[in-house]
Length: 221
Image (tube, rainbow, N blue to C red; front, side):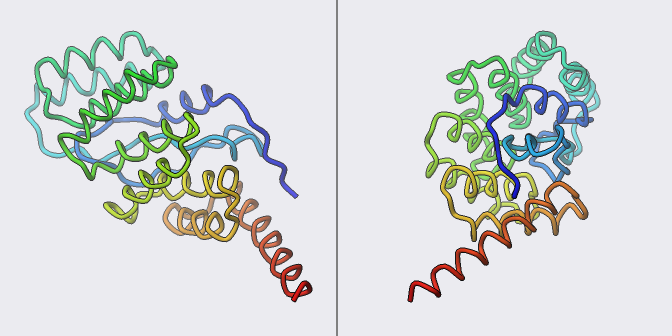
């Protein structure tokens, strides 16, 4: 049986951001959650990367790319400055607010992260990346049912948004103890991203645990 253990997620966040090319201004597509090594990956929620970038003026795109490149390189100080400069000029791009929220969360500034997410969601209430990040922030603060609502809104707005399915699986298995739901969440994630060997192991483990629970329930009847 896989035994989840709580770990610090900083390295996982940075690894995810390395995969970032453009943290787009209008939502996101699925991204395979990077493997942070063994069962520890199970404890960490997936962050966002590789969203679709809509047609925008070249100057805007250049500034955005520069900020995203600094973020992907792990230079959060420079990235934060660049995103703030970007938003001072172009405040109506929710993806920039989301990336700023990720930076704030990485710096353990939860209030600033929430403010950035609120700004993103004010521009687009159904922005899946913003909702996914909001769910992570709420889960971190022990607000499990509110986190679930944010993730569910993300997958309702964008059913192929794999990261929210993944994070729902983490939430349901480890925090809400809903094994059936977690199994469905991880299966949905796997169907969207293709083969993920680590998640495949979790799915097999959950299937065994769900079946064992059902056998125990049947025996009790």
